[in-house]
Image (cartoon, rainbow, N blue to C red; front, side):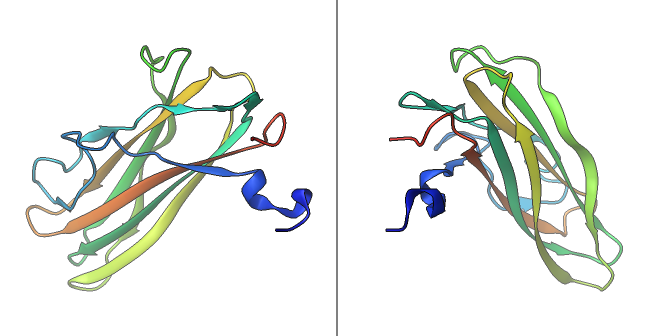
Length: 160
């Protein structure tokens, strides 16, 4: 155990940013043109409060892996919502519009990466959730999987 100011674990907490366990739209293997392709997955509510500490910033990171046909694309879109009670969420705010993350340059190639965004939570409500949409441009051939995590930091004090 290091000196508290050098202990990143005392300042950063990670949370599952995907849909709640068992939800119908929880991210899974997505096939181009199938039921979950280009469909928004609504994330679960994340409490910014830990004891008496309140997180003032967050990093949203979505890791993805895709098998794409030549010239086909994978796009991701992220949005955030806030709530005072983890029940009624405000209208979603776009973090990143559906921006192409990768365009295949070789037939049947596999690609992977991480899409990362910083959020300033200073003037926001106690709960947040991240919604993610993955879109494959091919029809019935390409596949992808992704997972979103949210890391809270910038606490008003070290969480207990």
